[in-house]
Length: 171
Image 1 (cartoon, one colour):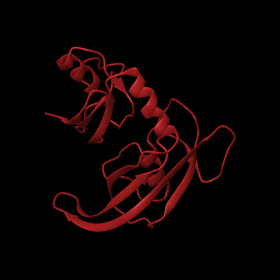
Image 2 (tube, rainbow, N blue to C red):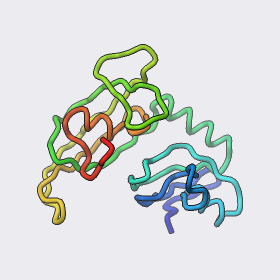
Image 3 (cartoon, rainbow, N blue to C red):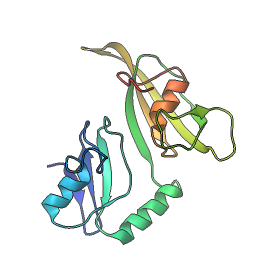
């Protein structure tokens, strides 16, 4: 029921929040990839990831060839990735560039200044809309276009500009 599109090369799935994309150290079974492979009875290939707490559309390759080609599109920034986020403060609508220290650990360290071997992080805040969420009170819904796709990028960048995601204890 989470598959929203499928053809011979790939499928698009609506990943629920709270479920990892792939196996983690302590969770080999309760993840999108394992569950889809169990139902499908064959190998599938990850093309992108979403954080555990993030819900949204995810492209899953059905062949290694499609995975390679799709990853080339991502590297070349030929795929548009849009996200909605809730924050307690309203950042400026514009493009933001930061640089992220390459490390396996989280939280990620970012800076507005370039450092040797740090990865560029670029995103654009397209819209900021004030909303009154029943359980959260006044907050802001941001529409974000992600230009690069670093681990925890949106979370780290929004925190760095003073607009952390609501409920994000890490950043």
